Image (tube, rainbow, N blue to C red):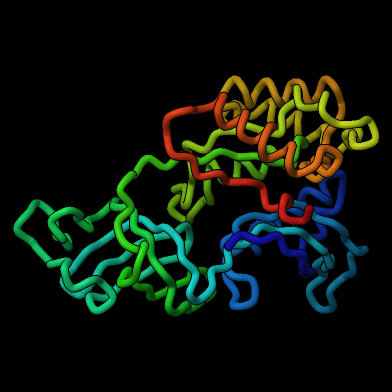
Length: 311
């Protein structure tokens, strides 16, 4: 579902943007042109992680614009046929109901709903009811994708709940936690998930505002050998400074403390460093302990930063 990709892209900037903020302009233009876009190959681009390499700019004939070829990493949402996922119901009518799973818009027709669900408009809202369960707006359902269609900035799918283990999910208490790199880019990725994507009407789409940061943290540095610690670059220290100056990002005292500590110790470590500890230690001791410390009584949906799968 979620993947990290590497891709090349031509970024065009104005001659007036050549100067001290040259790299920043390139990154901004790349994000504006890539984030929120869809393709059959990669799916929906959630966010750009970082620029890996940029070639020297060249002047475009006829326009005078500067064309810079860059290689970047991005997180994408790519659903597949027959994949099972959870979605939130957004609208219900007698033909079926619509649901949303992140950027994916889904329609489940009446024929893909079990026959023991009956459509009703007698209540304050239209719904499909089985007596025990009601499918209505804001209900969480588990669905199986049957087909997917893409356009430039949206994904559409048809799905079914007419199978075992599909349908309404009893508990709507769904909490997200984040485990990622202890570096400025890791913090920016966390904030992208938490704040969502800015839409044309200035609303935040696909935001997960209740997502909690549980790792990696500054006090985890004691677990790792010195060779796994990397000094912050000048660019990364600038990112930290911008985060410290932007009060809206410092939504919790914990995140503020992590930014301050990262700047103080001047080191970063990536989640791949758990290779030194072994996956058994990471999952059974580190991860479970972190989740237990954060919350012990709700159902947990663990959102692990995708680089973990490279280990």
